[in-house]
Image (cartoon, rainbow, N blue to C red; front, side):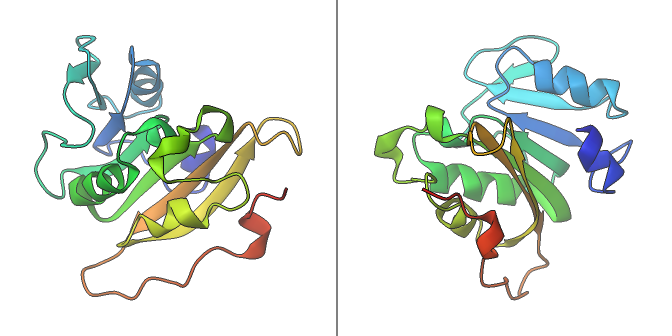
Amino acid sequence: FQKLSERGLLRPGFKALCVGAGSGHSVLALRENGLPDAIGIDRKSFAPLVRRGDIHRLPFAHDSFDFVFSASFDRALVPALLASEVERTLKTGGVAAMLVSPRRLNVGNAINPFYSLSPVVALFRNSDVVHVTRLGPPNAHDATVIVLRKLPFGSSKSLGLEPEYSWSK
């Protein structure tokens, strides 16, 4: 989260949500980085960091969060529904960071980012990509973080990723 803070995409005081938060490590990291009200959601509760809930039906109002993070996007049963829920709960101008990994990819979930991140980005219909970072050694394709910003209602989405953001064979 440090790199996002350095880029001005994550600021102290932001209201933050971690989707598919597991035992809450990402929530704790956000709290330690100036977001004391960060909360996680997962199928099991790990109080006080993670509430029990369905990541495909987030139990929060529209426009609730300035920042939404998920390291579980590529394991979602219905990625399009998760993307829609992330955008629904994200405030206009808010930032979402999705960690995707081809190694963990559920082949049956209709997203195949082995060669391109464009199918993942296309699911976020009301957001534009602002940053993409690969994690791990070069050419390992261990994981990629896609950072998006929610557009105002009625705005035009850009046409997609630059070629440099595509994974090669």
